[in-house]
Length: 364
Image (cartoon, rainbow, N blue to C red; front, side, top):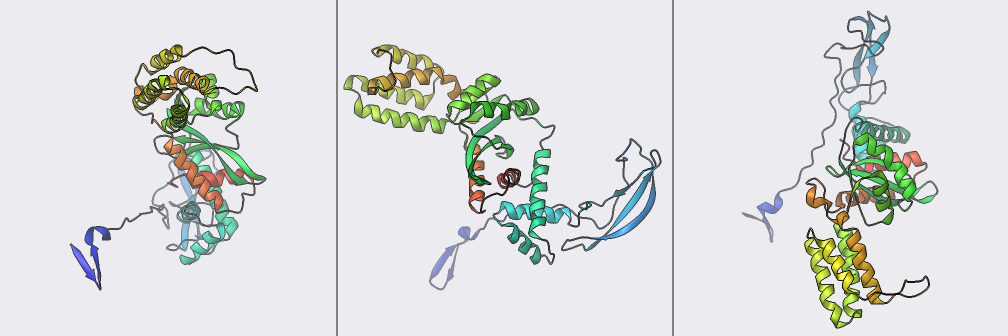
């Protein structure tokens, strides 16, 4: 159906808009149940030991009732907070709202202004602490969990001393960052030291990366299966083959076309076919540093490189949950880079890593 407004016809289907629903934590003004366990001992029997009223910062609840209990086993007292309430003056609902504001690109001053819409006031440093706390909770949410397939990628963001490298490990199921490190991805030893404890903690068996040489070294040392991104592979291989189409003699053009076909189809015996093509090319004297390699020498080197690393290109064929590209890692990196451009440089390394953790997550 079409609706006419003045001289413009609008299709009814085009008027459908996407609605984003943000679910914030529930907040109760008083407790609805008694505590089930003492925070100091295994005791489960308690005696109510008074109550007090506490003012909180929330648009719907301004005051809550907090009861205090005494454990009959260790005789220590403790507070039992209602749902969504803690020792802080803000409710959990408003803390999450601050993290969402940061995730959507607001500055800390902008988050403080956002609170003004809900008739509450906080300082920009309070907003900063809310984001740091959310990052800690995101890391803590991974304690005890396992994931078999992760993506690993590096990026450069504006940090305390200028443009600084970071390394991101992403869950390839959800695309959310699991861990961030202040590490240059080109340093294989630093990458290995960063990944080794995480591999043990989360039970990782497969990593998905781009074609950087350091990742091959790390995957071999940690005994991990390594899926190299097909997008990166095909991009650099196709560029090389296009050059060889122009520079190689006519007798080698059929080989170039066969390499195109092998990379496109990724057959199980692809490494053997590439090795057979390699053996058909004439041998050359050992290349010496400073000399320029001929196109045929480079083509021969390309064939043996693809053949030796063939298993890294095809892990996704025998592992169902392994993606054939690292697009989820790239998407997470894109979020981090976009957020880093909107700040005037992070003031500390820990603040940078925490801010990027929240920026790359879904803030669940």
